Length: 294
Image 1 (tube, rainbow, N blue to C red):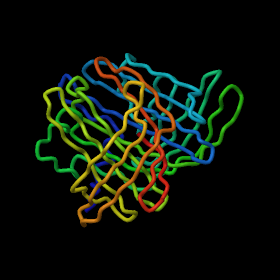
Image 2: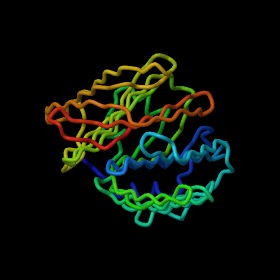
Image 3: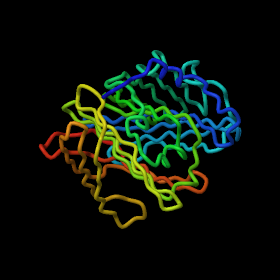
């Protein structure tokens, strides 16, 4: 069952890695409004001992990019969202830690001002998974908080203002982040209109091992996922998914299935790793629509 810990809020602030060369803190936010077909992805990575930082900001509408910026070698900062983090033109402020975050960004051609308000509380997906091997968690993070939000605000692209009122997943991670240990990973983060949400992540390491991070919100609480499987049909372009089918079972032995079809994708490198961020429309087997996520 959900076991939200009172100390989770500390991860909106600085967490030291005590000298671990790959220590990282990261903050991830996405949002999508199906009415306007507008979405964004924002990630901030802070590598204490590199020392450097990185940011991704991708915005799209009607399946096409309207603004993209990827900064992979920024100066490190000890500021965090709880303080009001400013990095590469973005200001990220955890106005209420874990519950409400405001992000603003402005350039002459593009700006945004969005607020993530907690819809379902953040929970540690690693702890909920209880992966026996623990290999994925060891290489990716010690803690991986994930939760869903209502997202509201606006974007302005070349003078045209676009409202965004949708939903989004966000995560907060702290721990060693070794992208080079990953051969491949895939994930699904659907938020369904009936209040359900799934965090399903599968990682395959360069040594051939695999591990999951997974949990399910049934509209009332986060639950463990006892079984998860996915079938992907890949598209003609490398790394693209043309369609997907996911099935999973929660700790109450309830079974669920959903399909996914693509809306937008963006490809970019991160050192030796290549990521394809792909937004998908998800539909439960009973026809319930899901907001989009990779």
